Amino acid sequence: MTTTLVAPPETREPAPPQPQRRRQRPVGGVVGSAALWVYAIGALVPLLLMVSNSLRSTPSLYSEPLSGPWPPNVDSYRRAWTDGHFGEYFLSSLLVTTGAVLLSTAVATMAAYGLARSRSRILSVIESVFLSGLLLPIHLAVLPIFYLMDGMGLVDSRWGLMLVYAAAGVPFSIFVLTTFFRQLPPELEEAARIDGATTWQMFVRIMLPLVRPAVATVVVFRFVPIWNDFLFPLVLLRSREKYTVPVGLTSFFGEYSTDWSSLFAGLVIATVPLIVLFLVATRQIVAGLTAGMSK
Amino acid sequence: MSRRSGLLFVAPALLLFGVFVLYPMVSALSYAFFTWHGTTRGVFVGLSNFGVLFTQEPFREQLPRAFGHNVAFFVGTMVIQNTLGLGIAVLLHRRARTRRLLQTLYAMPYLVSPIVIGYLWTLLLSPTFGPVNALLRTVGLESLAVPWLGDPSTALWVVVLVSAWQWVGFPVLLYGAALGGVPEELSEAARVDGASHWQTFRSITLPLLVPAIGTVSVLTFIFAMEAFALPYALGGSTGNPAGATDFMSLLFYRTAFENGSTNAIGSSSAIATLLFAVIFGGAVLATRVLRRAENRIGA
Image 1 (cartoon, chains in turn orange, cyan):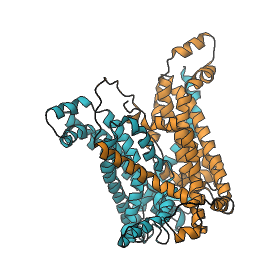
Image 2 (cartoon, helix red, strand yellow; image 1 turned 90 degrees about the vertical axis):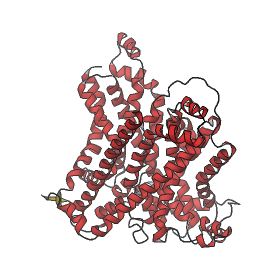
Image 3 (cartoon, rainbow over the protein chains, first blue to last red; image 1 turned 90 degrees about the horizontal axis):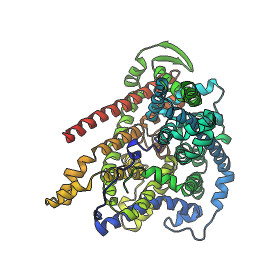
């Protein structure tokens, strides 16, 4: 159930400067290299099979399980997208995920600025409350969240789902952004203050442009777990036209269980936004994943 | 910045987090101590909802079984991450040119939703057209071409292996970062003194990796106790076949939303509270043991 990609604090510490020294030979030599590439193939082949099988017809999947997608056949995608309602699921997921990421990043950026630039006792208490949320297993609170939503008339509403995700993203976003704001020199704002800028103007005009890289990291790292989450839409959504992709997949797998090539196409559709995100934001992802690694 | 404007900046985030995370989280813990009639809260009953979990069916049979599966899932994942994951990280270390690329490739499976991964493997392992069994037959391992997910004796291990396959890139990254922090001078000195590669690794590198191993263990523990989407995709909400892939969160989900009992909220909240206590207790205990191990090495 842990779909959160929270990088633990250890990986975020800056690497200590290391003295120049002679290059060390890698462990394992050529055999080691070969093993690493073989494992890379093992990590990717199931995903490539998913794409390749989605481009084949169901009868050929049955008669030749080990064959390739030649000539490619995109009929399965048409069936999944229109007959299988993936068009609707996809739109729902896109709305909920984008809305939640925007809302939580917006409120977290403001809060992180306030926390980073204030020395008041009450704000440091509030900061520790936010940070405690990093390890809260929020999925265990699904029942009270359900009844809270029920009381607000937000069951079977994409707005409700969006609000839950936005709130769940607050601790991680604040954690990353506060660290980043604290690294910016306060002299920047002092100069602006002398010129008569208000706190809000300093935040919008001076600080926001400077924290763009951290905001990009937060957006990318929150998008993935929200897009992938399954329990909350399963519990909070009722009508099919509002389903997000993961819940849509379960009903699709029930109805189309014999149309194998469309099933593969559905899986690819569910994964495409992550691949696009991966291609667009490789820099942020790799920086986030490998932050703090030496060299 | 003044305290007043600081609070104004923090207020929207605090409101959102307080209403939709903190408040439900706190009330989740209180739900378990009341009796419920549908959605109406009845009287305070102390621990009786917990008693029911251990004395009445279906919980008396299903709860220990599901918990056992969570534990097996944790142990299995730990073993794979600390052998395969650590091994890959050691091999990757000092391969500056290909490391980023390979780490990125290993990370691909865990960007994909566990529900997609689960359904993908049900298709790949299908006894009728699955390429896995077709491959086994082609290379002459006919006897291994069995319905992996249909047999109660193998299904749980399929869940463990699929999950380990999906997540192994994560310990590779963490161990990679930790290996980067091990001073080369230490192992060089040991090598000069005639220690073998293996001896150097065992007595120098491994002890310095203890904090990273601890982080991986705690995160894996929390992850294993919460497992939901992957087992749901592989075995449905009842943990097919025959409850062989049932997990605590599946039992919780069934009790809360698929069970007609009037006290569904009471019993399911008791399960959630129990699970929360296990996760919290386990994490605290692991951190303690870890700190002691670190101190021993430091001394």
